Amino acid sequence: MQARMKNPAVNLPETLQALLAVSASIKDRGVSENTMDLVHMRVSQINGCSVCTDMGFRKLQKAGETIERIVGVSAWREMPYFTDAERAALALGEAMTRLADRPDAVSDEVWNEAAKYYDEKALSALIVSIAVDNVWNRLNATVRQQAGASWN
Image 1 (cartoon, rainbow, N blue to C red):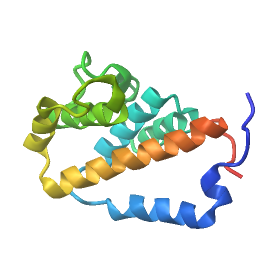
Image 2: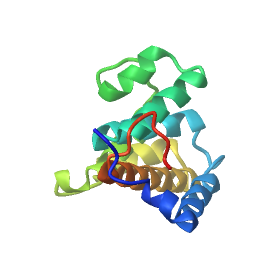
Image 3: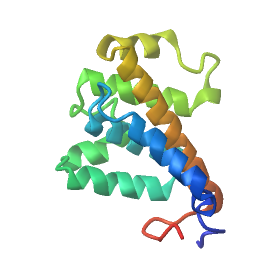
């Protein structure tokens, strides 16, 4: 498979800067970077984004994450490797990514579980992070951006 074109954000440098600025704005807001990266990995798996899945794997590996947790994120409900807070974040990520798969896109059950572990600022950061992950996934999947390939 070959990419259809450059990543659209590269073709629109102001867009790239804006997306990077949004990502920078949610750092250190009460959710660990590791948790954000695990959620990013899961969202990217759901969306079939090879670039983000590959980048997520490499980032988690470089940060010292165990292979069991990296691989296990695809089946996090059945794996013993995740904390309750991480599970709540992963469930929120899945619900936000699969909005049309259920009548109540983000159920009260998913929301309340996340709210047990994250205050309003941390939830805000998590929600924005998941939304940005979905933007990147959709940009990459649409143009068939390839894992390991340069964006430009």
